[in-house]
Image (tube, rainbow, N blue to C red):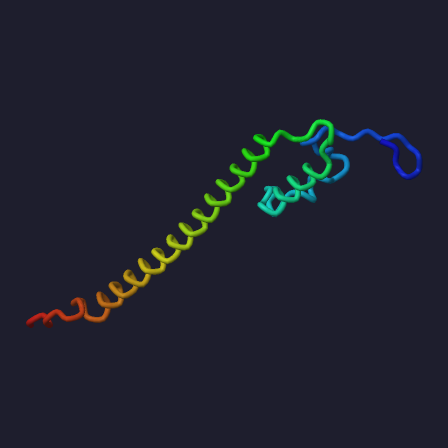
Length: 117
C-alpha cells in the first residue's frame, strides 16, 4: 500500500494488532478486556477492510456472530445472578439483624410468652 506521502507501507494480516501502534489499547475496555462494543467495532473493521477478491467466509462470520450472541446472553445472565445474590445477602442481613435485636431486647422471640420468675 502507498500512503499519501508516497511511502510504501505493509498492512498486517487480518486479525492481528501491532503492539507498537497502540491499536490494541483502543479496542480493549476496562481491565484490558474486550467488551461487546469493542468486539462489534473490530468485526465491522474486519468486514470493511477485507480483501474483496477473498472475502470472509459467510459461515465463519455467522459462527462469530453466534458466539458473540451466546457470550452476551451469558454476561446478562451473570449480571442478573449477581443482582439476585445481592438481594439474598441483604435479606439474610435483615433477618440476622432482626433476630439479633430480639435476642438482646429480652431474650424471648417476638410473640413468645414472658419467662416466669
